[in-house]
Length: 130
Image (cartoon, rainbow, N blue to C red; front, side):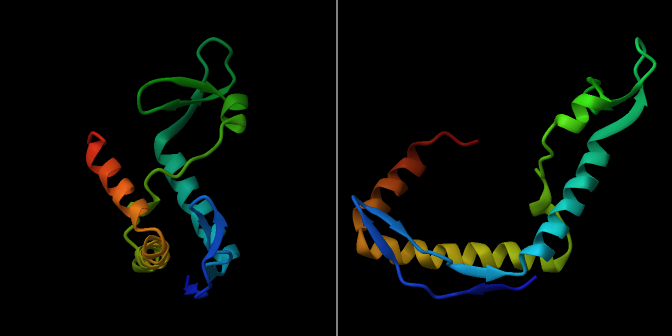
């Protein structure tokens, strides 16, 4: 899953807002397929299929013991909270490439507006650890 830096020019939209249109390219279909696979694995690890004790219908129970109906599970958005912890080297490389490209564009934007960098840095220091 190669991530390609398109080396685009910064577009200043005014009032300190910058955009880098089409900053990088990738095989989005392969990334989407891999992300879907990882989210499905995570979902299967988080929820166990069971029978609802009151209705006798199919249901799911999560690791905290909360019960969900099949309908609510179908309607629930799936999230990938631990994709970044996948041990496959190609996943780590893809995420690292995105970070590297993002950082290079941020550095370019900061060089145009150095006070932005200072403000973001001060905000980062002021935020409590999460």
